[in-house]
Length: 82
Image (cartoon, rainbow, N blue to C red; front, side, top):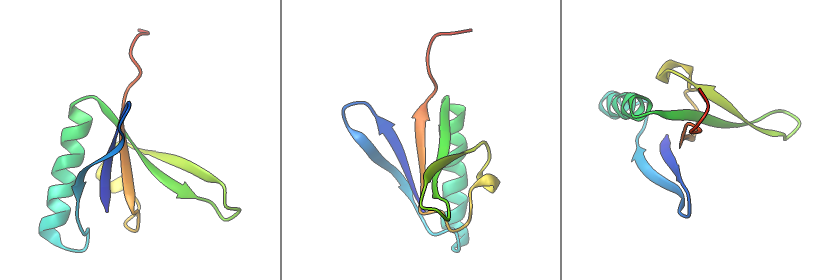
């Protein structure tokens, strides 16, 4: 599983990578996931449905990420508003 961060002008930047089947690597991914959310980022898992339509599934906890997900994309929350 790869964690990518969207950065304006840079596209996707790799911030972490690991195998969820290896306990130590999964623990590191969980820690990085929490760190990103605590810093104000949102997380989305790209998915493709049976018809081939591409969507994103938001994740608020590591447990919400499908075990077979290849990547999780972090992006900043929109500024402004109340």
